[in-house]
Every structure is written in C-alpha cells, then in structure tokens.
Image (cartoon, rainbow, N blue to C red):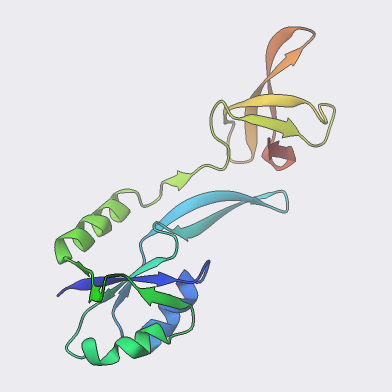
Length: 163
C-alpha cells in the first residue's frame, strides 16, 4: 500500500489523527519523547517526530474520499506537487517505524550540556550558570563562577530557567 502526507494545522496533529481515524482511515504519526518543565515540574511528553505532518494510507476509496480528508477538523492539506498527491512508499514508513522503535524510551532532555541557565530561587537566586549534567531525575549539576573561581553545584531542576 502507498501512503501520503497530510499537513495539519499548528499543534493539531493528535486532533486530526483522532478525527481521521474515526473516519476509518489508517493513520500514522511517529512520536518522540521530550522532557519539558511545566509549572516547575519535569514532564515527559510524546511529541510528533514531524510537527504538523501525519501519514495516511491509501485504500481503494482514497481518490473518492480526498474531500473528506481535506475537510476534517485539524487538517490543513494533503501534500502535493502541482495537482499530484505525493506518494510515500511502504519502505519509507517501515524505516521511520524502525527508527521510532529503536529510540523508544529515549527522552530528549530539556536542558542541554553546556547551555547557560539562570537559577530562580534559593541562595544562588539570579546567578547564571552552565548546565553540565543531570544529577538524578530531579537535580542538575551546574558550573558557576564564585569569587573568580569555577565551582560545581547541584540544584533542583525546577528552579532553573534557560537563558
């Protein structure tokens, strides 16, 4: 079977996926795990690997049902070259699926090594530092300059902010 690519409206991938699946279309949205800080708490979210894009499998009725796809809430358009809908072969989808499987359980970190951060609370409040690494799930090791000397400290991630 051949697949096609749908462009969704911004941040509406899961909504469009749900609505198209309810209409008996075979859909695929590859996901990745991403760490975020929400209200000073570490949250791992599943985000689309390709933001704003979904894959839809072509079936026997695909050409007659294109108008249904385009008018589905959350869908912006089918990806075309001129008037021809661009096909995506099964091998490409299989490769994406195997890549997604091999990265299952791997989370993109919110803070990245050597990134500048600001401490928002505690005795180091308003101090700028360099993020070095995680110190468990909830803490981070930072490089700070104190009295013209570099020092490492361990602080709670919830009080850090990217600069």
